[in-house]
Length: 260
Image (cartoon, rainbow, N blue to C red; front, side, top):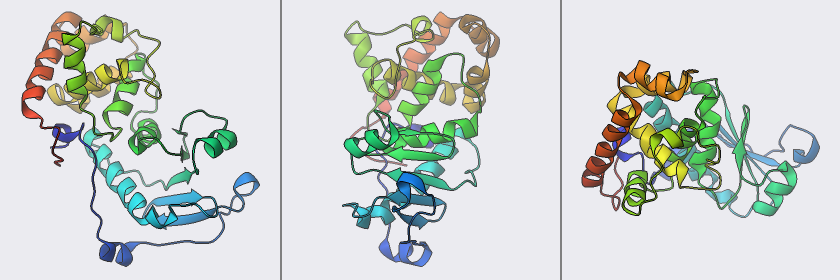
């Protein structure tokens, strides 16, 4: 089941023989003008990778593109939606220097049309930024839900239930009431608040189905009111269920193994 392996590293083995049968490669210049006019493209199914001439790891793009296809499929399975028909355009920069200089951004990011990516970064983060507006075209009233989903499906291999349990044991746990109104949460730069948020959204989607998470994501009511209306219980009771879920997941997830 997808939610049972959400926190585990996405490791996908792609046979070269299969790729050679189904990939479509383009090695011409990218048709857009401006600063990308000399860039090259590589396409595989609905993924188009745009990269500068002489990119040092261009030979790995068949596997990279196949992993994007698989990651997108897996994310859509989590949300119980169809894979979008849009072409997933990914700009690959040589590193932080080129990426920040050309985009004016400090971290890789996605907008409505494309992903802008450079290492070191987890590819699932920007993939989720690209997908979220296609799942729900609204900004949630409670930002921790969005950042939790970005962290949950970042494909970093981290178990955020483990992180949450550790915060509890160390006396650093942020209660749900506070997490819901936290304005400092930022999945680009931290895995403290966003780790707890990832654990929480996984709990909600598992315990109440993706429909429950969708209703909470769409709600414009005060947080406590939304919780009572959607889940028929006060915030403290929902937090108790969540932390029980965390303890249960600690028993059943083996983070040394990769499973589907």
